[in-house]
Image (cartoon, rainbow over all chains, first blue to last red; front, side):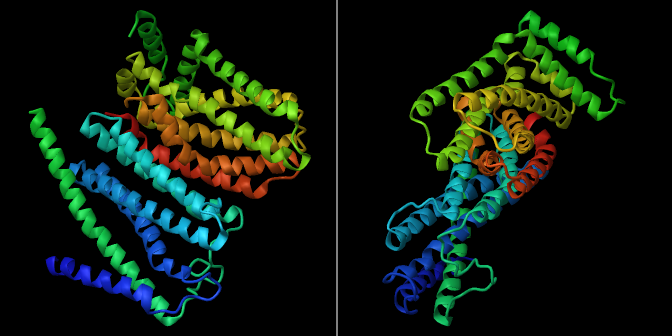
Length: 220
Length: 243
């Protein structure tokens, strides 16, 4: 496991170098702006994955009442928010270059912003409850309730109106419209960001567990 | 808990059907208890209607004198109407659970009634309250803004289905925030992102209803949302409400 973590640094470096130097810029995009897909989409993917992990650990908490599961769920939400904000920032930079404005109320960017609000509210809810056990239970209930209604944000709202978003990955044909090098770097970045997320999750949840133990010892 | 609250609660609980009675009757008893409490303290219900009246008047003062271009009228009025209804709901619907905590009756209610039935009863009460708010707000809004509705039946369908989703989600979240600090602010913060898909569909459906069309697609989305929210609320009721 430690070797994998050590390998992640050169791997991510290779992905970044590849993203800027290997594939040619995609046609139909201004300048080099298409290269942002190697960072923007993995950030969005990692954010969504983090929220799914949070939902999974929320189920585990409600089933077992093990506080460690609550630590992991809360850590996943915090990291998911970080990646989601990065997805919004990179998306806004792309929007400024391509469409002339940082924010265009495109259904997909709006639904992603709402996702950020939704999980920021999760952190507000946690902060508003003092008792750790009650906080864990309420947070798990909210995370699961949100997970059930999340598809309406992701799959329904963006399809009610037309989108400005490029259709390279999500499109009616159900195909990934990329050439070989672009596809290689893109999936390489997805794997790298996913591995980075799980590493950050293990660090953050361990830190949360230590904080919980310290708080418990202070109460004693 | 003051003497009046204790008396009203114990008499309400004693009227609950026995454990062998059907779940619907027990949920109905919770709804009736909430309605009796709300009617006893008329100021609470009246304040929600006063809030709605104030919001409608404010919107009509802000928009009415200038008029709206005909092509934007349905869109703007639909959005404003649902914004008013959302904030009315945020003002009134969380009270269902918050009141139990404030009056000290929550513990007894948890012991007497299963959480899913408590949630069902309070959702029913909130739904009736929402429909009453809508029944007053929508005609007042239409009159003050001189907004003609193409299909009143379609609008009624949007209110009935959209109001149900709003009530289910608001009641569930009210159970969550009942024991948190800063309840009112927290309720708005956590409910807005969850309710937005419903509100967007309701606004789209209201625009179609105003144009005299049947809003089939947004109504289907609202029905799916209502179903998903009901199932999730039922399954998570004990986690949200019980100790």
